[in-house]
Length: 146
Image 1 (cartoon, rainbow, N blue to C red):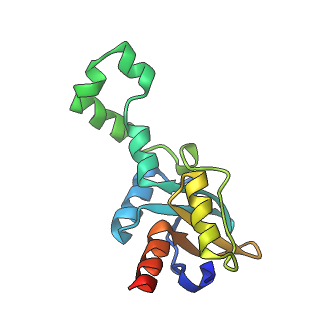
Image 2: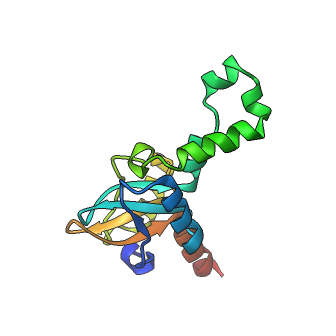
């Protein structure tokens, strides 16, 4: 079974110069955990809810310096508001890890596990044609063993 047979063909995208707030709004609207970052029709990165969440949380040196960061919800909210104005390009995963539609799904799954990602943009001849997620692969495999 090849990636192209089970990938999602409708891919939600965002531009690298859009804000994190805009990216979060798109994710929420489409109930997506991540977006492919596209510039001039070329995949330049991926941004996920986890990326945004990690950016909002205090960094380890901040926690060591001042323990209030661990318990102060107002600090976290203030940080979130500031970060929401940041551009996607500032925290997106880059360079993007992509795959082609003719790759076997087992190899795609292995790539995700080795690279510690949960989704891979599918790019054929330089064009974004879909996205495959660990959930897509797991669901396919579960249907096969029923």
